[in-house]
Length: 211
Image (cartoon, rainbow, N blue to C red; front, top):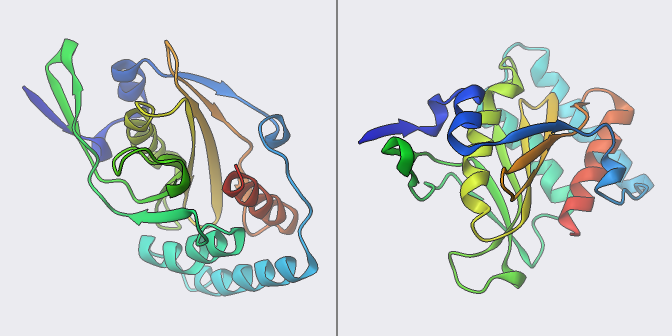
């Protein structure tokens, strides 16, 4: 029996183990309905930008600071802290068994937003958004193999889920769908430090929150 940690998997290994097929989607509007932001939302978004930028100017922003300064305020502003959504932090995933290869994969997801309104039992929440965060100097795609591994397990209970990997500055959304083979779509990369992309980022988070 081989034991693997999801944190150490490469994207190539994830494709091989789970059969994922990659696609590119050049527009969020193909999947979500994005609504204009209010003036108040834009002002608060700008404040989050300014706070995070001050830390970027000092050098590397740690993973914990990325969560605290950027991800958490954005989730709150998008509505993820309100019922029926619940935020779950840093919990172990159930072991994933790859029978053909006599392999068990273990891991711990970073941030998970679930809807309590749609659950049938405590372990079967409807996943809205799975987030993997890194420090500001790490390429966000290093979090993609982990995100896909955790999402694959989540697809046992639902047909699709959203994922996000971020280093605070760049945000890569992924739409993952159940299937044979399972498919994930990479959406346009968003830079939080660009005003128009920051607005689109919040619009996307709000749209996912309202699903």
